[in-house]
Image 1 (spheres, one colour):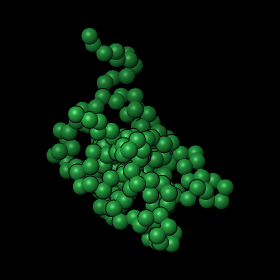
Image 2 (spheres, one colour):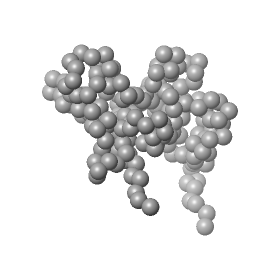
Image 3 (spheres, one colour):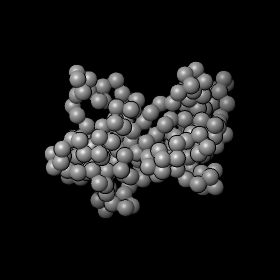
Image 4 (cartoon, one colour):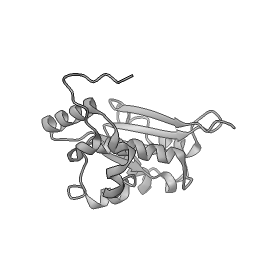
Length: 187
């Protein structure tokens, strides 16, 4: 059975609209190095599964928004595992790659050296970095493995460092939030 295609929208893949993503030439090299570990080299990017996603409506919306506002949505991505080959980190990277290809300014915070909540003063540079990223963002993606029916301590530690309010405004207030959880299951 074929899929329905709106007569007003042609099928378009992300490979057909590379202009939406922040190019290396237009990206800040320090931000790219620190916050975009999800990016692939050009050869891999051209053939990865994300390039083949048919997202005509999302692509059209992103193009219209970029043309109208000349600004990008800022998305902060947090993940909750310190394992080198973590499924939640990989899932966070895949979501980041899709959003980046759709024109978002995506930044991933690496939690590996973030101190445990209340073990240091809130003026610690990594705490300040996390808080600044949260304030910078228009939306968050939170991705954590399931551990004993809950988020991991690594993930919760990041959330705990983001203050409940700055003045009378919560740092997540007015922002879109996507929660992704990786569940291993049993064999």
